Image (cartoon, rainbow, N blue to C red; front, side, top):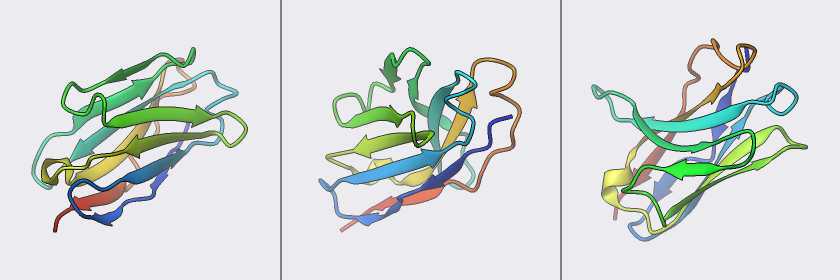
Amino acid sequence: QVQTEESGGGLVQPGGSLRLACTAPGFTSNGCGMHWYRHTPGSQREWVASIRRDDTTTYLSSVGGRFTISRSRPKDTVYLQMRSLKPEDTAIYSCKAYGRSSCEGAPWGPGTQVTVSS
């Protein structure tokens, strides 16, 4: 199992930027991909972006062109750079490793809160 820990959230004004980090020891050596999800209290998790083991990236249509997912192999960390933030981006953001069986099965971490408000 690859356990994840998210950081980097905060309060930002509309139009602002934040960079989230997902630290995942073993992520690189296990050849995992990583998903970012988000949710608000009482709602289901919404998939936001993914990066595959070959660095191919995919995005939710509403964040494409504003969010960028990337990785640092030496740091076993995946980033989510968020620009032009909107109030509707307000949520708790969580990451989850996927791919091989050694990547999956860890419980969700607490996530990191992103609040976009003036």
